[in-house]
Image (cartoon, rainbow, N blue to C red):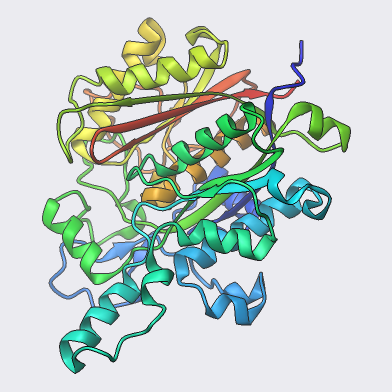
Length: 414
């Protein structure tokens, strides 16, 4: 029986390396299109990794007022444009919602580094007093949520979540909780990131977490493959519109799926490496399923964190086997990062959007670049081609530096 208090997804917006809107993103994702290419924004001579999944041909002025766009840095632009698309997709008239009853949580793992690097260079070269007076307000991670509120004219709960690569999933889960507490009627939730800058790319390269497969960018991100050697850094944004079922049905909204549960845990073991046995990541998955009122056997698909690093893919495999037992080798699993790269704070939101569309359409996107499955990652990874399977429920995983884990459980709308 449908519960009028269910939290449902009524709108989705996405700007990604493989599409400047939701339709393009989804069509390219299920076709197995890679967004990886050589970095265009700076000279990569001497860098371990010279490739990235950049959002191509993006002009914020095509989506929002050009003057407003010029006041924002890129990560805010991406978030605002994705949120505008999500609201339009949902059909909700925000002007008809009481000002304090619509809010947003948009997270970013880093904020802006491009302006930060330029401002530091200005300070070093020209001395104090020559910087941009708006530099700090433009680059801090909460500014994406602030700009979404300004653009859409909403005055309710407004904040950013920051939990590394779990940011997007945590943001969506916390927005769900605000609705469940009755503190808002409409929430826009998601994640955004744009950190393809010299400092960040070099720092990740020094950690040896970025791929060095520079000769073939589109084949470089290969989650769960024996020959993987690190992730491809990406950028992008996705936003969801969340409402209570009774409100969505009252206005005749199309419902994509039910957001059933959030699971959260901490490895509490390392600032960078995951807990190798996957115990605490597994607990987050279990919690999401339980909070959705489901059992593991109800889950028909796992949208994996799947970073394409040796440690993370093995750990996630162990977590999946811990949760699903004998089904661990057979339950369909795929990693969107094989196509869009690792979008860091945006990953959980973009991958939540893909999970919802999998439930809505009955199509599970592939994991591309699967040539030699790693025997330590015994999973049904949907290699290289999408699969048509009608499923009742799915989970999506996001695990971040610091051992911060988040999983979301979605249920198909009947």
